[in-house]
Amino acid sequence: PCYSALLSDDNFSCNSEEHVCKTTEFAVRDGAKGSFVNESIIPPATLNTPDGGPINPTGAGNAYAGAYVSCRASGSSAEEAAILANAVGAVVCEYDNLPPWTWEVLDRVARAACEIKDEVRNRAVLNDA
Image (cartoon, rainbow, N blue to C red; front, top):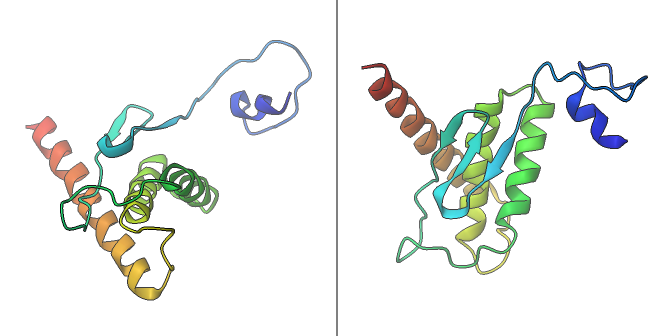
C-alpha cells in the first residue's frame, strides 16, 4: 500500500507484511490553537485582523498542509515546517478569499513565522528553567 512509505526506513519498498517503525513523524492541525508536530506544540500566529479573529478560515488547513510538506521536502525540520505552516494558515485566515501572494503577503507570512518561532523559543526556555 502507498502508506508503507510512512512506516519505512527511507527504502520505500516493502517486501513483507510486517512493518517496523523506526521513526514516525506526525503533524496535527488544531485550528486557532496552532498545531502539534511530533511531541511539540506549535502555537498559532496572532491574526492581523480588526478583531483578531479569522475573516475566512476556508483553505487554511490545505495551506498548512501544502506549506508543511513543501518545507519538509526542502530539508526543514518538522518543527520548522510546522512553524511556517502555522504562519501560512494564519495569513490565509486574514482574507475574504485566498491571499494574493504578493511580496507584502509573503512578508506577512515571514513576520508571523518569526512571531511563532519566538514563542516556541520562549516556551523552551521556560521549560528548561
